[in-house]
Amino acid sequence: MITATGLRKAYGELTVLDGIDFDVPAGSVFALLGPNGAGKTTAVQILTTLISADAGEIRVGGHDPVTEPDAVRAAIGVTGQFSAVDALLTGRENLLLMADLHHLGRQPGRRRAAELLERFDLTDAAGKQVAAYSGGMRRRLDIAMGLVGDPRIVFLDEPTTGLDPRSRQAMWQTVRDLVANGVTIFLTTQYLEEADQLADRIAVLNGGRIVAEGTAEQLKRLVPGGHVTLRFADARALGLAAAALDPADVDPDQLTLQVPGDGSVSSLRALFAALDSARVEVETLSVHAPDLDDVFLALTEKEPAR
Image (cartoon, rainbow, N blue to C red; front, side):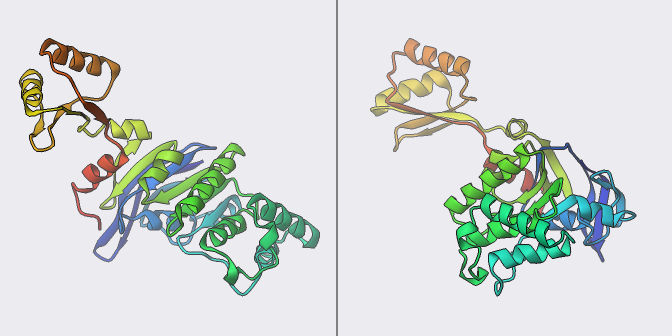
């Protein structure tokens, strides 16, 4: 549904996108993950016809944003980093304004506004000025406005920035509902948990380049660092365990040691077998597997973002 090959964009001597490639299947969530200044918003602006690329081949909904911008705009909805709602209008008036811009007509526009108000749990607040809305309500209205034209593709540029945890969870459910209805989502985010929760595929953008791409589980396997932490009752048990296990780290003050491992059943079975042979009892055990935090830090530390 969205493809880019060799996408490049520079401002003077500053290269923002340095030949990136990606392919987003229909009905999926693609997350572009990266630090501030990595080029995420620039990529969205190019794909949504707001700015032009310096080089590369792009298709959005089967159309070229350069030669067929109107066809691309007809197929997409966009929610930017900052709310585009008019705070002096009511929620309903904002949606009706968008319906007029889509030339839906009076009655179809009212029906569409009512549907979206109900869908985003804004019916009770429909007649209130948006200035009185909470941050979460504004964000839901912002997304609803992007859906007035019933787009097949929705771009969400850091949609949950500044939202409290409850509002963020509600936004995630909104994204899941959209995908369940066949909508393709292109998501940019700095929240690693958000990408882990929502995305079918994730691309990590750093320094203008995609440094890794895959499912969340595939990306986690790129980074070593899984380990098991064992705590013991006394220093004697700790010493015996250290001699039996060859740990990566020992903390005598906390009576703990760390053993490299992925936390699988087979690795834990071997670990306990070694402890049984050494006649050592473990007081507590915890397993740490690499997560997207580890992936993000490992991949974005290799080269500073531009």
